[in-house]
Image (cartoon, rainbow, N blue to C red; front, side, top):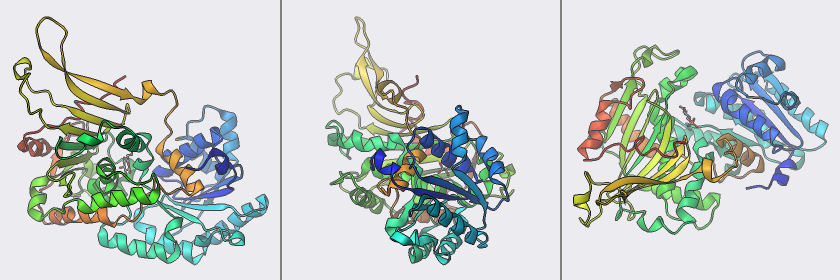
Length: 491
Ligand code: BG6
């Protein structure tokens, strides 16, 4: 990671396409403002916000102010002076000449080249046109005076399936080299996700048990309380499997199961994650019927910009296997859903039952050992174990050992986007995705089988834990959901 001083000395221009959308308003701008307040942005910095709406800069800033908490009015005012709004249409190629002029004007004003960063916060369905437009206007080339290549930042989902992701990549590579491309999976920027590397490889405790000999199964849950909100148009075409399992959950899965990388750098980490993704068993149609669940929350069809006959899943569950020496035979349950009871993302490793019956008569029911990596909220790590209850009789009860960020550290946790923006400016791609084809190869057979109606779409009540079928699936394997039961750091 670049040092603070390096960042300060990288004059940069940050162009956000799709600047009026949810991502820009809720994540990118609040993070930029926080970085600005913490004096972590380059000294010479400009933000050009662009979208189709014909706002003035002031009108745009009023819109942004709604989602950017600014207790310090003085700082907010000076931050505003970095921002300029420009209406453009990247698909129809409108306003791009003006954008170029504004970039040149900034570089003239600071008297040097700048690092040009183009952030695609637009609908993934128009990426192809966007890449082409940037190429045609030579915006991919960056500041020519010093041959400084521009960078492009692309949000997930990258493609709609394997084939489209490859086509998209081809188009992207016509104009951009890999070192210019920053494919975001914002989960990788989360502090707790980065801590998984430290937890696994900077400690001696866990690696010896991190395999099929000790681990019975693993549950990865990403539950959300919110529904599709203003994103009906995108979400109805994507669905839960594409929206979060293809990227966030498969990334989490690969990080918690990969072999130790030789170095903590982009190539070593990407290679090891890729090994895992390649080893995940592709499900047959019959397996999709038994190993997956898809559900839709009641009322989803009435959401704004959602097809009233939609069959898009807002809940998805997939039981996957990694066919390698370390994990052969261990089931990984990945589940995600909108409008569930609450927001929680966690990874729970459930250990096998102890092979010795010494304490069997002292417990009402067996107390399993579990290791919980809680990504959000109340970030931390927990170990669930059996302990003797104080007293004259011998009774075992379950207890939790916890490490909680909130109590162990006083430093505030930066938002994932803050970390990733810094890395975009400094050019560090470690926390960005490489090619994403392998994850589509896992997801595509599931979609294909769903289209053939394997695992029929079920419904679930908002505020529940999803379809009853998901409970049946895990219970058939003689297991039960552990999140949120084992949720930790409730302080
Ligand atoms: C996004 C998904 O990638 O992640 C959204 O597209 C989801 O549907 C969001 O709501 C959740 O992110 P976070 O950081 O709030 O857990």
